[in-house]
Structure formats: structure tokens, C-alpha cells
Amino acid sequence: MTQVPISWFLTLSAVLFALGVAGFLFRRSIITVFMSIELMLNAVNLSFVTFAYEYKQVNGHLFTFFVMVVAAAEAAVGLAIILTVFKNRATLNIDDMDSMKD
Amino acid sequence: MDVVLFLIFAFIAVVAAINVVVQTHPIASAVSLIGVMGSLAILYLLLGAEFIAVAQVIVYAGAVMVLFIFVIMLLNAGAEVKRGRSLLVQLLGAPLLIALLGLLAYFVQRIFPRNVTVHFGGFTGGSAQAIGRALFTTYLLPFEVISLLILIAILGAIVLGRKELD
Image (tube, rainbow over all chains, first blue to last red):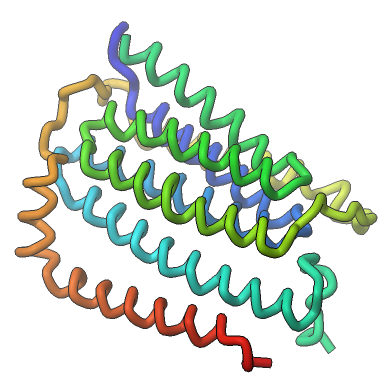
């Protein structure tokens, strides 16, 4: 067998997505939470490219391209927000950023 | 051959992704995330997505992660402080996550039969030419809108990064 079933790619994508969710939910450092979001976006990109292969169409690649652009913009704005929060509060722990809770 | 390539890089991707979640120091997480993105670029090549593979390396592994590491070093972010979690999280967190993964994998295996397979060279429509043609014909409006989005993001980052903001 020299060919890879397409479901393996999708399963890998699911595993990476679940790990991203785990990092997003379990971690306490805001930077690591942000990186987990990037991990989830990458997992979704992999399934887009896999579907592009399955249907032999380039549209999936275009969606991946747009996701990459949005992720880059999100990283720029998100990291600027993290910098501002750190400047004002001197903490990176998301448990300490709870002023909207009360 | 394709199976070996897939297994090697899928293994690297999964191990690095676990490392992203498990490491307590943000720099270690960031370097592991670069590993995930690099091995995903190889898998994109296997799927015939040349342009996306190169863009993955340049944009994600290059630009975005450098930005992350810049911020980590700028903030001098140390290891995460361990803090007790509630009993509910300790008991239910991991099992629910494994249930989510199992559900996703189950539906993937059910919906996608094994007769659709991937081999290198099976799809050659992912070249820069094909993507450029689609980008400037079918997806012209989204392309222009996304350039506006980038502009707004740049302005937002500048405004947020200004010193007098408090």
C-alpha cells in the first residue's frame, strides 16, 4: 500500500484541533492560549487542503489562504492587545483578568 | 513511500502539538508550534498544495511565530504559575476532550471511505498560477476585502501599541 487514505489526514486534523482546544481550555498563560488558537486554525487549514485534494479543486487552497491572512491580522492585533494588557496589569495569567466578571 | 512520509510528519506534528499544550514555558510552546507548522507544510506538499506549503512556511512559521517570540521576549514571560483547578475540571476535562476527539474521528472514518486515497502528484492544481488565477477572477472581491482587513489590523495594532493609551 503506497497511498494514504484521505481519512488519515482528516483524523490528523481532528487530533490537532482537539489538542488546540485542550491548550485553549487548560492553559493559564494568555500567550499559550493564543498559540492554541493558531494550532486550531492550522488544523482546519489541513482539512481544507485535504478536501481540495479530494474534490480536485483549488477553492480549498483559496480558503486556506484567506484563513492564513486572517490569522496573521489576528496575531498582530491580539499581540498588541496582550502588550497593552500587560502594560496596565503586569500579568499574563488569564485568571487575573476578570474585571468583566463582577 | 507516501505512507511513510505521512506517518513520519504526522507523528512529528502530533508530538509537537502535545508539546505545545504540555510545556509550561511559552518559548518552548512557540518552538514546538513552529515544528507543527513545518511538518504541516510537508503534508501540504504531499497533498499537492505547493503555494500553500510555501505560504505556510513564510507566513506562519516565519512571520507570525517570530511576532509571538518577539512578544514573549518583550514581556519576559516566564513559566506559568501552577494553580489549583476546580474538581469538576480535573475530573471531566480530559475525558470530555477525548470524547470530542473520538466523536470527530468516528465521523471522519464513517463519512470518508478508505477508497479515496492520497498519493504525491495526484492533484496538480495547487500551483501559484492556478491560485493566482482563481484569486483574481472568482475570489476578487474577497481578496480586496481582505486587503482592507489587513489595513485595519495594522491601524489597530498601531493604536493599541501607542504609549499614551491607558
